[in-house]
Length: 426
Image (cartoon, rainbow, N blue to C red; front, top):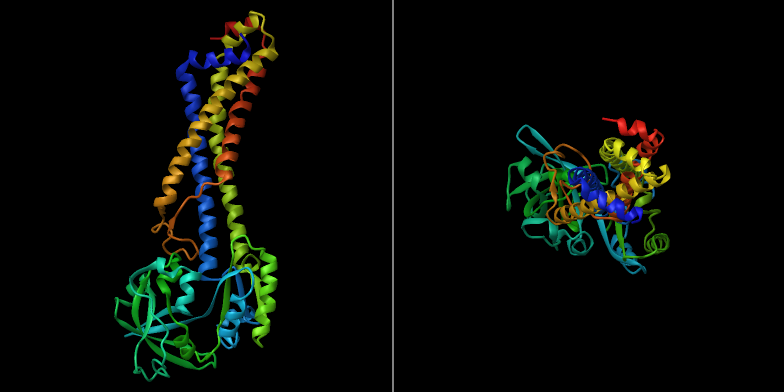
């Protein structure tokens, strides 16, 4: 009978010990598989939110806007916005493009000043670009008005009609209003003056980003252009690429197309090159990897401790094998093979259970609403784990390696003891 057969039979000789070793490896593997799946889900969620609601995959702006962004420099705009968007849409490799104007303002209620974030959008284009239909929780998506709407100054709060808007659910709570109600926003214009406009809640949105959900609303771009005195202009144009498109080539092509359509000096950036975006994701991924490594080390100590205890408890058995003529090298091979079998069984079981749970949670999601309350990050309150090669193949292989290799040290140490001394061990 060869050592492999003996090792396999040894597993069944002491089932309680074998079950303990397999369980420790399985629990550790399952935990790390789920952890890395969650971290992958977080990274994907953040990337999706940023490209859908903030930067697009390529962002086109006035080249000076980013320098003075903290001042809300609406005058640093992209003129001839419609022609610029059309040129972007016609570029090879571009799947969709949208013009937007974003800014801040306030709603005054009695003695309260409630700060809000507004975004002027082309709702029809947004259906394809950001899938806005997915986040509508009530009401409907409005269309752009064909006539001037709202007042022309903060002292004039009447107008021919109210401007329909899609408002974050959290904003309605803060304002104490509901679907069909109205509110008036006061903001600064591109000319450094003030203006106000009254909006009607036509749709309620549950934005996946808490900051947008609690402070943001979207309104038709033509109405917002009138509000901030930016007729025919946009604050930025965002583009989404075709799947599998060459990122660098498309970005360069977009720069040429956009610059031919407008006289504005432009900054054209791929989203991963935007410092406030990709640098944060990069930092977050490093932090997540460190967290995962620490967790895996902790899980690995359970495997190591269980394996070493199982080996040391069999000191007399090792002495018996040596007394029967088995060489130290053969003893090490025997126990290594046995530990390898146990590690494969444990890691395999942990992988299956971890993947099953991660798959279920990838559909149902994990609600972190309370945990993320007050956290200003582009992460959705409900996260969906994502199974990746890192969370399956790598973790499983590492668990097997840890379980098998840790048997070498105690076994090698015991085989150095004389068989007589090992047999005397109690």
